[in-house]
Amino acid sequence: MGRLGHRLRFAGKKLLRMVLLLFGVSAVTFALMAASPLDPLQTNVGQAALGSMSPEQIAQLEAYWGMDVPPLERYLSWLIGALHGDFGTSLLYRQPVLTVIGQRLRSSLWLMLTAWILSGVLGLALGITAGACRDRWPDKLIRGYCFTISSTPAFWLALLLLMIFSVWLGWLPIGLSIPIGMDAASVTLLDRLRHAILPALTLSITGVANIALHTREKTIDVMESDYALFARARGERPLAIAVRHGLWNVALPAITLQFASISEIVGGSVLVEQVFSYPGLGQAAVTAGLGSDLPLLLGITVVTAALVFAGNLAADLLYGAVDPKIRRGAARS
Amino acid sequence: MRTSNRRRSTLSFLLAAAAALAVVTVVGILLTETAMETDFSRTGLPPSLDALFGTDWMGRDMFARTLSGLSLSIRIGLLTAAISAAVALALGIVSAVCGGLVDAAISWCIDLVMGIPHILLVMLISIACGRGFTGVVMGVALSHWTSLARVVRGEVIQLRQAPYILTAQKLGVSRAGIVRRHLLPHLLPQFLTGLVLLFPHAILHEASVTFLGFGLSSERPAIGAILSESMRYLTTGKWWLALFPGLSLVLVVMLFALLGDRLRRLLDPASVHG
Image (cartoon, rainbow over the protein chains, first blue to last red):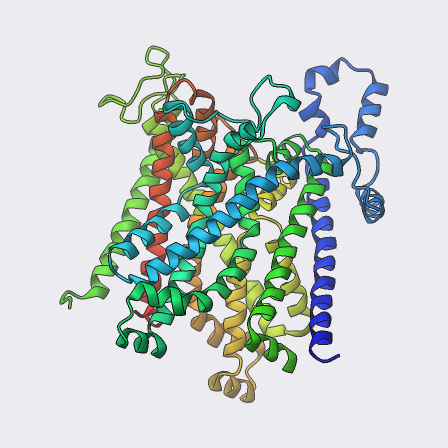
């Protein structure tokens, strides 16, 4: 018992809250989609086609899009299905929602994971450099970069990179995760990589700003501390002090921030995938939203929310695991 | 050391930035007619002195389109940030003052909204409102209040134990009276800077959602719509269709961010010392 028991109880409590929040997310998403005045038949079948159909055909279509059942009943039946691992069938792709999400997530995950790790490492390095060289040119440069990037819409940055590297220089392909007209089996890993470079680069560039600025603040705090002053008195150089004494102190909040940034990475991937027509989760979300594909959008929202909550949970647990002060503080309270 | 009055130079920067944004807004409104004009005798022209930002495939002047799009973005940004900030203030205060179950419920809602990636939530709310102008405004307004609400809530909880609030309570001032006479004036500086710092996010999300096709209709010269159209002409080398509108959007967003930062320095000097 004792400390371990406490840790487990802490994790359990967080987990329970996460599950409740996921229920909330599904209910809110469903309510928003159900409240929509947009007619799925109009958007997907079209006015002209509807006009030429018999009433029975229209009724059949309405049943397919689930328009003849009241929303609450539909939500409850969806919820019961979801608890049994059945998220329904995507109306646009005509496949089980989980299959579609599984396929899309696989190609998105590479993208997001690369961007997540790259932006974290790069952000940490830039932040420490800026903090160590406070108010000198590296700091000014890095701060300016962060400020510019946080004011730039991700999709425009994607367009810019696409213009430079694909259209102008012709180094990289325009889009899609595989070359057009190629058999899925004959696609090599290299092809996939080439198509993922620009989207991953865009996501990494945008993700850096937040973590770099935060790390800079923390590094400045460290550099003003007594032990940093003592190190300087011993003759250590600022950058060496920042790395040797700052890194551990800075890494912890940075890790938390990094786990909390999953939501932004997912949001960014929606935009970036749209620009590069990269067949990932984000693109599926946009397609589902434009085509009123309720089960798919609902599934995607729940899955991404689960990712975000899992990130927060991991941050909470890691914080306690890495920092003994917090662990003891939590045990006392 | 600098001898000039820093407070005064900050203030003049603030006024200049606000004036520049106001000019863009007004000129953009005036140019809306020009932005819609098509002229098929001059389609797809690269930038020149005649057409600063070039023309598109329908011969519309990109400079006029960009400015009227920016104007639209700024106005939507103002509207949504105001709604968002008002919601944040109300919920933050109610959450902290009432405490207990109400506090738990509001905190839960904040966690819920923060759990869904912003862009997805804006999309969903926009769908619920039938897309278009209402969809974008509601979507952005109802998804950006969370962090400011947390700040307000934290501030009020700290303030509750302040001597003058406790004294007012003992003197029998009602809860509503305390909120109105003591809490709101204290929160004003933070609230105002929070409001201005909401603009950049609001504008960026408005453009993003319009870009994805959930926002303003494509006939309207909105920056998101312009950039989404420009995607179709990228491969033919018409770079100016995407470069200038996006660049001007970045400049406007930066101006708003600087404005918020300077405002914070003026209203709340203690928080940005050093």
